[in-house]
Length: 443
Image 1: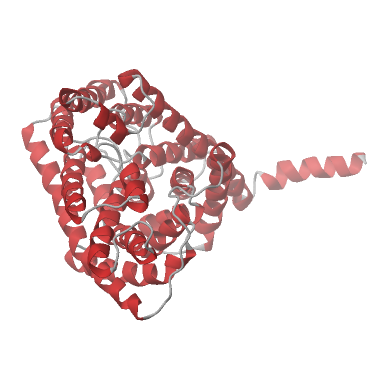
Image 2 (image 1 turned 180 degrees about the horizontal axis):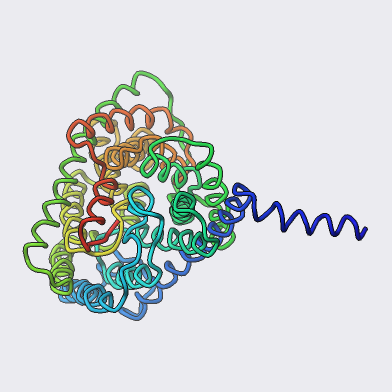
């Protein structure tokens, strides 16, 4: 027995921690756990900070509807000013080490992400999103998980190549746990950061994504993010109509991209003060919310409302236009957040508008109408990220609806093809290059 014990100990010392693949697998599992926990902590911090602001645990849109007009104006302005002050003054005391953004660290850098800078950016993001900014939470969540990968890789003294891989593992774990979507979270990094499938990069990221979702499901269960009624969809001649929806998303996505870029340029002309620009960004969202309170937050609750209640085409047009403008203002002002969930919202609204024309009943109980909403989400996501495979699987994992896969595949490929004709860079590759050349950071 003593002989086997000594042999086992020798195996651990001489093989386990010297074998690169075994070390990467162990690190990926640790990153999945720690990244998922950081995502959960950020989510809890968002809820706690929102309670401090308004002493309420309701959703952002419900909160906006409950506030008087001056409250809808004041809260996002104050939150934007506080977030801007953190980025403008607190970051001056933090040494610049490594990349500012996880995509930059994977695609252009050496895999090093600053811990203190990431934490300060996350604190600024909490101030913005908990006060009504029209931007997603997934950006800082993924950044925190990627930071865990970078930190662990540096502790293990890994090479820059392996360090970039562990940052990618963290990013996959962060998105997977944020959306309860392990396959889509994995493919997000593969399609956007790496651009190709590789056994050397794929297997550690699978370990990280699976571990992260297992931890998240322990706390929140296995239910999909968007609960939709069961429906059946026949693959008949109507599948041709989804081609039109893909074309629509492919043409609208460059307009949304242009709005985001134009807003950023306008806010940069105001001056270098992050406090002023982000306060003005919050003020802009507040002004819109006086008449359209649904623009507050990342758009999750409004997507759920479209999936479960009946919207008129006029209401859909108003919320769609208002959300695009509000998200552009938040993004352009420099608010730290993501555009992933707002993109899903814009796609859902486009799909619902399309459903008003091509389904006999624009009702949440109508299977064809629901399918247009879901296909709109996926195809618009594909036309923004240029990651059609990730977009297909993301909508499937968000809804657990296999019936939608066939039309979704068709529309995502078409929308991606059309959008790519307008711009070669996706919203995320554009952001990675932007993060390298400026001090703005927003996912």
